[in-house]
Structures are given as C-alpha cells and as structure tokens.
Length: 320
Ligand code: SF4
Image (cartoon, rainbow, N blue to C red; front, side, top):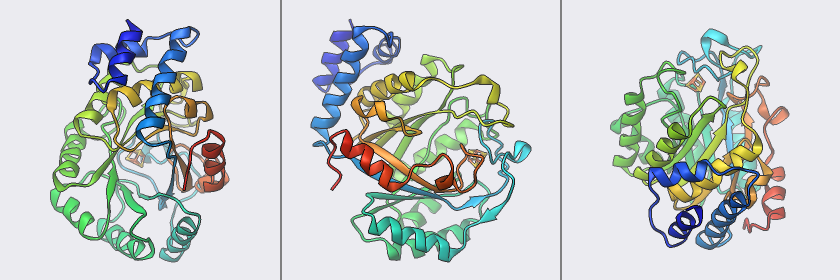
C-alpha cells in the first residue's frame, strides 16, 4: 500500500487525502518510514536539481498583537517577552545589506498584524531599492485585500508567506474566512505563495494536517513548509508540549509529496535530519520571532545565515 502511494508520487500522480493520511500514519520505527523519506529526498533532489535555498527573515517589531494567537509570544493577552520595540529604518537597511552580501536567495520582512500598513509599505519599498532583482522579496504580514496585494506587487514584492493556521479561529482571534480571502487575493494578483502547515502540536490530528497540505497544493504553492509549535512559557498552549524532530521530519516528507511545491520545501524550526527527507530550504532568522522570548532571535533560537549554509552544504545541497 505505502509502496504504491510512493510510486504514484514518483510518477507525478497527485496524491489523495487518503494517501496523505496513510503516509502520515507510517510508524517512524518501521522500514516504511525510510521508504517515505527516501522518496521525498529523491524527488526534491531531482526536481529542484539539488539546489538548496537560504532564506533570511527579519521580524521588524516586538509589540503586543491583538490577534492573540495562543502559541505566540507576542499575543497581547499573554505577551511573553520583556520589552517592546520597532526596528529603525537604518537598522533594517543595514541588515538587508548584510543579507545581500552573504548571498541569500529570498529576503522576508515580517510584522505583527497591527503594524501601520503605510509605514510598512514605505519600508518595503525602500528595501527593494537595496535588493538586486535576482533576490526575491517576501512579506509576512496581517491579512489584506486585492488592492493591497497589487500595491505590494507594484513596489517590488515578489511573494507572501501566508497561511490558514491549524485551528485558525480557535487558537487565534482571526476568522478562517479572513485568512482564506487573503490567500485568494495573493493568488489573484499573482504573488508567489509561501505556505506552511503550522504550528503543529501533539494535539493536532493527521486529518487537520492533511487538509492544510492539500490547501497549499490547491493554491499552487511555490515554497512549502511544515513547522512544529515551540512551547513558550506563558502562552496558553504551552502545556500541550511539542512533537518530536522525527515526527516533524515525517510530516515534512509527506508534505513534500502531497503539496507538490514547485521550488522548495522547508521544515521549521531548523531540523537537520529533515534534510534527508525532501527539505532543501532553511531560514536564518533575525529580530522579533513569535517562537522566542528573546526579541532579537539571532541571539536566541534563530539560526544565522552562515549556520544555514553549513547545514545545507553538509547535506550535499548546492547553494550557489
Ligand atoms: S502569530 Fe502573528 S498574528 Fe498571531 S499573535 Fe503572533 S504576531 Fe499576532
């Protein structure tokens, strides 16, 4: 059964939700687990020509956010960090220049949902002037409509990280339909979509996880990811705990096969073993981070660009 599903994936036949569930149910202690990760690895290396990708993200502000995601250190009802700040334009520009010099492929600018939109568009526009055309510029922001999508495109944004989170509207103060309307806007205006099944915790069912993998595929995802929730003390979901690296690696392999991303696959936070399971892209992280109590994550949980490069080349990906 598993071998047949993997053969379908190798032939480029779209997998069903039932197929996704069967793969997700594979026991990590069984030989089938290795068949699964070998297939995801093979497809990534062949389809993407063994190219590895180094992405860099800056969190532009550490401020209480009204959307109150129950896993996020920045939610206003449970703000778990001990300061508030916004990065200055100079500091952002300096970091961007360093990213460009260190040869990253894509640069992400991330804000909390309440950040002033016009101020953000100005920052993005200035950032684009510093970034050569061959480097993609991606935003990770709150929900928006088609008009904002068109404005983002006009100022040189190439893509958007946007998702319908697991238990959106239950573990967050955002209606699922609002997230979906933004995904529709991204598709309609022709921005590249970066999707992720997140934040995965032990309480999430494979059914919920498979639904998000298929949603990503239906939107024609370019860069796909899976992310496990990091339990942050003080956040409402802290007690639910965390899935293992092995489980995350399995979910990454299944997402690689089910979602059919056209360019890259990521598992987050950085999980080296996932690099033999179809993952060919990692993030260096700077500034604020919803998974860290350190508001300058490069001094906390975040990996640096150099560390990412070492991991990808050590896994025999080419990153030129
Ligand atoms: S995850 Fe984003 S939207 Fe949710 S509370 Fe944190 S900053 Fe706000």
